[in-house]
Image 1 (spheres, rainbow, N blue to C red):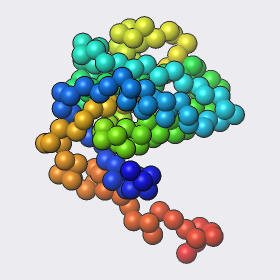
Image 2 (cartoon, rainbow, N blue to C red):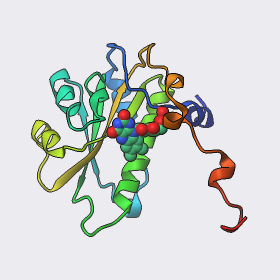
Image 3 (cartoon, rainbow, N blue to C red):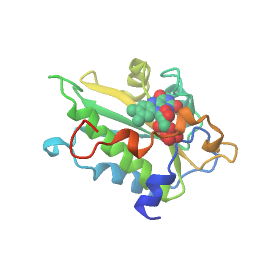
Length: 175
Ligand SMILES: Cc1cc2nc3c(=O)[nH]c(=O)nc-3n(C[C@H](O)[C@H](O)[C@H](O)COP(=O)(O)O)c2cc1C
């Protein structure tokens, strides 16, 4: 799949079939995250791959919009050391780059995904034995898309995009 085509067609999918994803494909996907550039090349992440259903179930209860993790074929839990100490935007930016690499790599293999914000990190910390000096801000569910999970059925406000004209300025702010 061409990169531009993958970018245009990718949408979040929150319901998956029961078909497992092979270890080879999981490693290809997470490797795409590993290859992302990061500020000062710090590579601040450790990616925890979760395939066991009881653990996925716990992850699905780590916040009000995390439920899609429960039915995933696997999840990648993003952990970072001392997320913002001192406060900096670079670590979330780095995690975003790694996440998008994984999401697009998966999409190119026919595997769908959705981000999840971890609002109750203590639950994830206990289940995954994440040390106290690491934060666990987001996870990503992955799996083969369920036929009933067509993102075109979602309201445009949840999946549409502003037009190019609405989000760009040429040369300076004022038109
Ligand atoms: C940082 C971030 C956090 C997100 N957290 C959640 C989440 O907790 N639960 C969820 O269902 N979707 C989550 N999403 C997915 C967005 O809701 C989704 O990307 C957005 O609505 C656009 O829809 P689309 O990806 O289908 O185009 C998150 C996306 C990002 C980038």
